[in-house]
Image 1 (tube, one colour):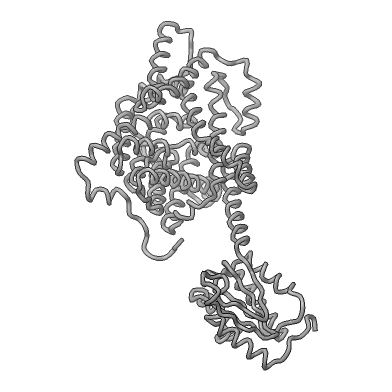
Image 2 (cartoon, one colour):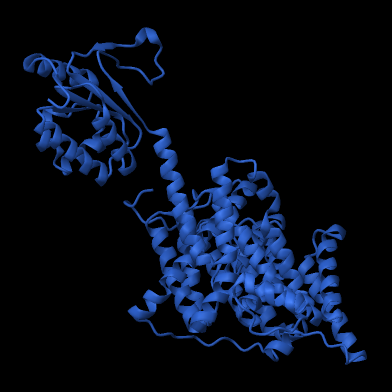
Length: 573
């Protein structure tokens, strides 16, 4: 991670247009139309499951999809509403209303832009895989649970948002199952599953919606007594009216209240978009500009609240559809947004006839694909710590909420990282003789062995010198048995950086050593670490000549001091 230098904002679209031609346009046009058709049912389904109208989902896919393709750092990324946001969006609307969602989305967009400006794209990609799997599987199960009501035709209203109470209500109302609704849902499920087996070019979700909607409409005309709830029954007749620009009230109280939700949206959006981009890179051989991608995602989420939209991120399924259809530049994503806009303008009233049970089937298939049960089965063979982290993240996502799961998941990621760094950072103690080249690739014939006088102890830190290691190092110093040394050499050739806690502990160690009449010499100090020590005043504390660039110089100095001051003293004397 580098927080200095030029801002990394180079959208792929700008690069693609420099060498754009007719052949690329034909490929992108085909891919854009296919992706637009595939995105239609998903945008509608995700919007309804999130607690907003179908038109909001389409507007989000149009505006957000355009912005992600125009300003993102991946050539084939398709942006829009996704299943991952259903849980968090539904919860925000329930607590803070649509205006609260708009403010949270805007704030999340700003956070994403800041993350991109500070070049945090690479860091986000290194969130431990078990945590990502736990999030995704938890979200999948939550999405599945939200669709049971419409799939079975229970007709329940004001369902609890919590997972366990919701299932309690389901089980207590199983007697209210509507056979006609279940039949529609099962047929929809069958069409979605078997359509790709007939032709991979036919999108299963859209095929199911068209077939089942026509069948349901005809059935209603012949048998009005058979009532299967449709989108129009729940949301009224949908129109193609263009959205009005929305304003909202911002103050510190609102910001403080919605900041945790905004942070959750931002982190989840960053994880999903960069995960989608990484998968796409594996297929196309391209390389995502991760920080540009975060800025592009941020700009999209800043824009969509002003047209009443919901959060946007990169969508893996739509991105893969784009790749398989021949799309190779961001123009395909822009065409996909234009296709959705044309559908919104000319076909919006027809969406009212789509059965809710059909959308429930679509989302259940999405949840199944998201669950990654094969990945979970594979991870069960991983170390117990990884399995535990995955299980904790999964349970927090399902039983509590995504905000808590994200926060604790990130905390677990930090703890795991620190633990592994501490496990790989060693502190070794030498006396009498020191092999200068130990720990390098040189053969034994080229090793130089230094004689260390009695009264001189050498401590070597192999790895980052940060707060966790600083405490470990201090405890080792205090617990070393035997006589007090005259000189302590701290060898730092393998220390890439020093943090403030380590500097503080080092300062205390030097002061306490000097109080006991013990000299401290630092050796093998890298240039960047030396500058950090100088900035902290360590050179003034021990003397700049006591900071050596090589162990041989440090040992010569220490031996001379030990010879002048005599034999070491007994510990505690």
